[in-house]
Length: 70
Image (cartoon, rainbow, N blue to C red; front, side, top):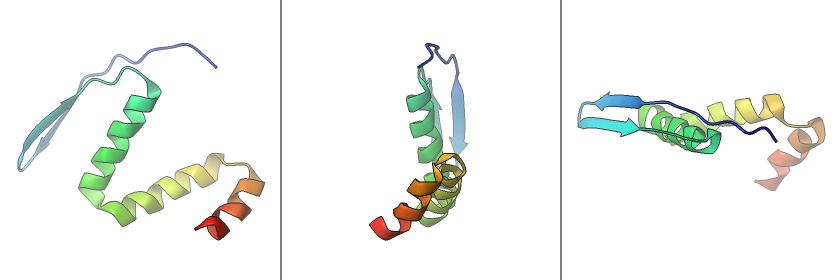
């Protein structure tokens, strides 16, 4: 596993106000991205997008097993 850090300052303006994020790890950045995606597109659209991304990087045997696990 590589060792690195993220230096980002994310500011989001919503009709209701604004949010600010400062992720320091890839995991924190992913959580922020998913949160913003769900807020903007809704849960089902976010789930569909994330499934597409995971299919792209998942081993082929995991893809054939995943639909049955639901």
